[in-house]
Picture 1 (spheres, rainbow, N blue to C red):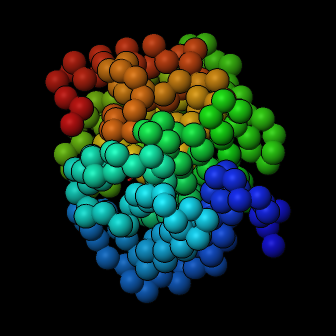
Picture 2: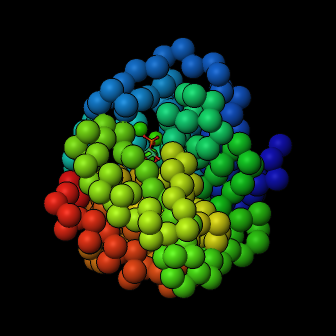
Length: 284
Ligand code: IPD
Ligand code: CA
Ligand code: CA
Ligand code: CA
C-alpha cells in the first residue's frame, strides 16, 4: 500500500488516490506494452496502458462523484483541436475533472523513467485541485486552490533565480510536432545562449511540477493541451510562481503556448520568446 491513500472522500483525496493507484499500475506495466499505436501523427503514441490507466481513474472519480464530468486525453478524438473542442463541450459543467493518464507516453514506451499521471478538478472553469504523480520517483505533487502546494506533504516554493542567466529552463517538443518544429527551434536557438541551461524531459506535467518545486526556474512549450497543464498550473501558482501564454497573456485552460516560471524571470522569458518569434517563426 502506498502512503498516499487517503480515507476522506474530499476532491483532493480522490484525486490523490486515483493518481496513486493508476501510477502504481503504470509502473508495473513498464516494458510490457503489446499495443503500441499512433494517433494524430507518427510521434503521437498511445498504448493499452494509457487507455487502461484512464479507465481506472474515470471509474474511481465516478464512484465518488457520479455527477461530475471528466475530460480525459484518451477519451477525445485526437488532433490539434482536441482540447479546445472538449473544453467547449464541457463549458457548462460545474465540476470538470481533467485527466492525463500518462503524461510522457514516449518516455514510458522507451523505459525512460520520467512520466506522470496528471489529474485536475476545475470548478466553473477554474482549477481548484491539481495532483501530479511520478511513479518512478514515487513523488506525489498536490495543490489545492488557496491552500498551497505540497510534495511528500512538504510545502513547495518556486526557486529564487532573478535573471535568465541564472535560470534552468525546460521545454518540450509536442507530439505531432511537425507544425511547431520551426518555432521550437527558434525558441531554443534564441534561449540557449541566454540561460544557464535547457532541459527537455518529456513530460510537460512533470516540468510544471518541477517549476513549482523550485527544481526548474521555468518552462515553456508550444502546442500543449488542457490535460497537460491543468494540474501543473495550480501547482505553479500555489507555489508562488506564474503561468500564462508566450505573449504574456493570462492563464486559462485553453492556452496552448505555455510559459511557467518562478515569477521573478517571467517577464524576461516572455520577452525572449517574443524575440524568438520575431525572428520569423510564428508560434503555431
Ligand atoms: C506529451 C508530453 C510531452 C510534451 C508533449 C505532450 P503525452 O504528453 O507532455 O512532454 O512535449 O507536448 O503531448 O502525449 O505523453 O501525454
Ligand atoms: Ca498523448
Ligand atoms: Ca500529455
Ligand atoms: Ca497522455
